[in-house]
Every structure is written in C-alpha cells, then in structure tokens.
Length: 393
Image (cartoon, rainbow, N blue to C red; front, side, top):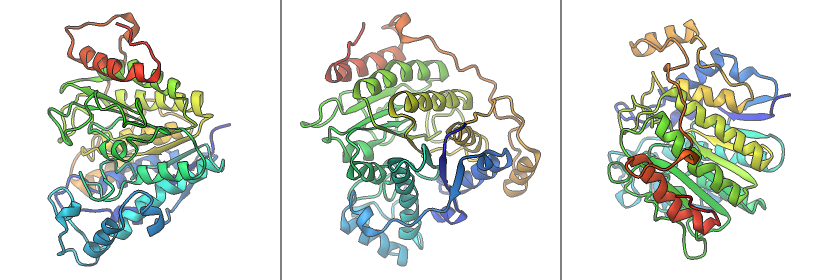
C-alpha cells in the first residue's frame, strides 16, 4: 500500500505572478501539474489534491514582521506603491495586484501540509509552488515575498516537534530559512548550492554553521560552477545522509528548486533531470529511514519553464505519491500538443535527459586536486565535528 499524501493545488495558486518577462513565470507550475495529471500521478490511491487555505496574519507573523505584512498588503492593493526597504518594487520582486493574497495562499499550502503530517493525517505533504526560501523576516528577496517553508517549519515546532531537518537542493543558497533558524538548535538547515562567489544571494559558505546557541545547526555545501550529476550526487551523499542521521530529525522538510539543471538560464551547474530525480529518491529514503516517512515537500526555483521544470517536478510528485516514473517514460502527446499551442515551443518527448546519474562514493577516496572534492571537504571540516561526526580525510 502506498503512502497517504496531500497535494496542494488549485489554479488560483498561479496568481503568484510577477508579470510578463519575469523568470518566476507561473506557467512552469501550470505545465507541471498538467503533466502530472496526464501521467496519472494525481489520481493515485491515497493521494488527495486540495486547494490551499490562505494563511492569516497570525500565521505569517510567526516568522515575518507585521510591518512587512502590512507593506505587502498595501503594495498588493496599489502596485504603484514601492517599499524598497522591504524588498518590494525591485526588479526581483515587482509589486502586483493581489500580492498579499497570492503569497499568503502559497504559505497556507505549505503550512497545511505540515500540519497534516504533524497530525498523522498524511505521510507526505507537497506544495509544489512553495519553496520561497529567500524570504526574510522583514523583507522580500529573490522572487520570494513570504517564506512559506520557514512558516511551515515554525508550525511544526509550535506543534511540538523537537527536531526538524530542512534540506534545500535549489541552486541558490537557502538563506532565508537559514537566517530565521540560525540560532535554533531544533532546526537543522542543509543547503547544496552553487558557490556564493558566483551566484546570488552571496551566502552559504561552509563556515556558516549555526548561531551561538545552535552550533552545527547549519550545513552548507558550496559547489563550483559546472558541477554535473556525478559531482553533485557525490557531494550530496558525502554530506546529507551523515548529518541527518546525526541530527535524528522527527520530520524532514525539503525544497526542490530544479534550477541546478544545465539548461537553467540563471545559474551555472550542469545537472540533468535524471540526476535531480536521483536526489528526490534519496531524500524519500531518508524521510522513511529517519522520520517514519514524515516528509513535507516544496518546489522552489527553476526557470527552464518548458524543458526542465515540468519533468523534474512531475518526477518529484510521482516519488512523493509512492510510484516513481521510469525515466524512459514517453511524455503524453496531449501534453506536448498543449505546450506547443501555449508557448510555440516543442516539448520534450521523454521524461529523461538520457543521463546516467551514477557517482563515485566519497568513501572511495578524497582527491585534493578536484574542486568538488575540496568543496565537500570544506563542509565536512566545518560542520561534521559540531555534529559529532568524523571528517574522514
């Protein structure tokens, strides 16, 4: 019998929309859910698709300042109002009508699935439009108005969970979540991302390991531009499983930005859909090994809106709902026809990039001449002793 899963989805979620030309186009989510539906992922036994509630102010201010909430609401009522001190009205975060309601709905979806997992109503909960990990307590940042994952983690803590692990595989550092919980020993934040030397937001160095009261609570793997499946998966398995096992979380929260793909226009890693799928399978296995299957899942970044995001996140949804899709699966023709009619672009024909996501395990030896290995070692040296782990080499 498969897991009981709650999927947050309603077309109203596409109202999180910064306008024409912005990279965070809602079509990437629309195409994802259409592809998942065409492949039968949303109709599986035990999978319940629900429209998200809108988070109220009390929920939002569990993480965000009342002044930010007021500024978002005001800018959404009058998009000509700019509040740059709160990150609103910038190129990254232009204001749009209904901004507060649209973003509060994203937050409501992530909080809803977190509370459902907490209550034992579901094993897994997923909000694919969530993962707005750059949002700060007092300001929007990096296409993220409110930080839905941080609010969801706060709801888990307020519900009595003592140890939450957050793993972020977006190409950009999960800076907002890290900052919000940097000094909270109940939350372990783990982020694998392109080095901040070459990519926004300029944080996420290995030396960022947690606050005074929470040493070891932040783990950062900063990978060099050009890292592909083999190097990325080697880094993932060299760091993520051991730190999660040392922390022993009760719930796993994950953010699955797929902008680490080679075709993503905003970053410089070289993963394939096949490599990303391998990371989803590994995180599922860790949720079941360590958390009795309690797993809260969000999307995140990803700006190759036709070729990458729908396939990557449909793989994610399939894994969350208990039946992974084989990479060789043919993409349904009706979806491909819709993509061409909607975008004027050809759609991918299969659920694979034809890549082989194998890697050499860290245990087979450290190569100090390899940039990826040096990045792994920097993280292990900075974080492992704080978690009671041996660095090894």
